Length: 262
Image (tube, rainbow, N blue to C red; front, top):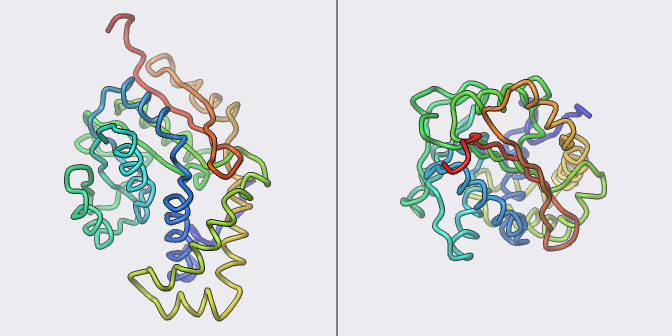
């Protein structure tokens, strides 16, 4: 269902959009929500052969930071993440890159995920965590098609499949992350405190976005239909992974279809 979400609507107040995204990033970290994604992500990296990945729609870069920490925790060496977004946040990304200079770089210019410049794409795979549902079908198809034309692979995942109840396991940690946000955020603290503690707006908007997200995610059938016109250059894999507090997310990735033995 193509419904709106507060966190990706240009008419939504900036501090409200920010606090929803920041709270989601902390939910992923505090709840260990991406831990089950590490095994399929490592399989994707091995199949793609890429040492660097472009994070598409990086936002505040929460998913890439969590993936890096979880990979290190699992004893694996993370790839180098290059953060990109149509609305880049270089001030935020600079801090993250300073904390993990070996694993994080970023592109300051706006990057359209449907048309990655060849110089940026060359030799790199692509990853999009918990963001693919924000793109309507035409743009989603274009993202996958562009990856199949000019990348070493693309990895897409969401924290749930299409089920309105899929959001519920995130709620306990998500509420805690939301309530703590005004104390932990770096910008617009007073505005975020008012939205979170002084009004029901932050909780209501976050709840709406969570439920709507579960209605916007693509099914396996829809994802495979999107890539069916792309020919045999890539092979595509779909699977699910368990969430620590219950439920499961999905992953969908494509890698070059290399000849046997290569």
